[in-house]
Length: 263
Ligand code: SF4
Image 1 (cartoon, rainbow, N blue to C red):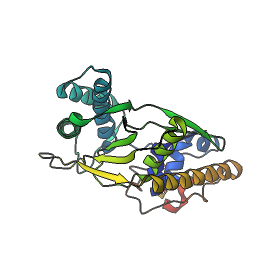
Image 2: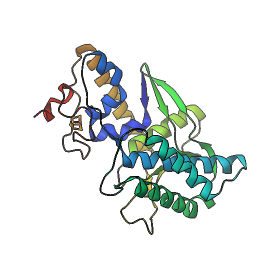
Image 3: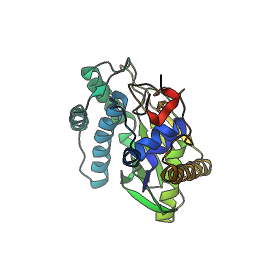
């Protein structure tokens, strides 16, 4: 069984929704039926922008620089591929044209503020460690030459990512036997008006983030073992106050997996 570090942020929001994302096939095997939610435009913009950023960083590392317009084309191509799934738009990115404009603006900001000083050691490298019978997997966006972990975020809201980055730090320390040099979230939020996008860097405390990550992973493992034993999800904390708690965004909404939201 695999636990991806990137799921830890969602786990702190609504554990039950994220548990389902992680262990969907087990839940289906137990006979639960789910909605087919749309692919959130914010997630699609994030994935597409990351594709452009990662290609640029890999180019810096390999000495094969790509231009900003190359990175934009790569990001847009990725977005169009993701659009093969049903995209759910929101009031910030209302349609495909706006979403593509946002990707271009995010990449322009990245090129202006981050690209010139980037010192990539690893770009989206997969790290894996075994823990209590599970495989913990992380793909940090960027590890710099001084072992700093940097993750790029483009969400409309400021969200705390300590758990995800703390897990990256822990995995990195186990594998490389080096101390993590710092944890940074570089946030370029998508907004309705992207004329002048902003970059904010959030620096996290490494030890506190690692401790938070480990306590969440321990909870996930307990939840998983109890679910496999009982076939029942009610012991997994649900958060109906989550902004993703709706029939549009959550596949468990109104189903037997989340009776709280049944009408
Ligand atoms: S329906 Fe709401 S409370 Fe239930 S799992 Fe989904 S997000 Fe969480």
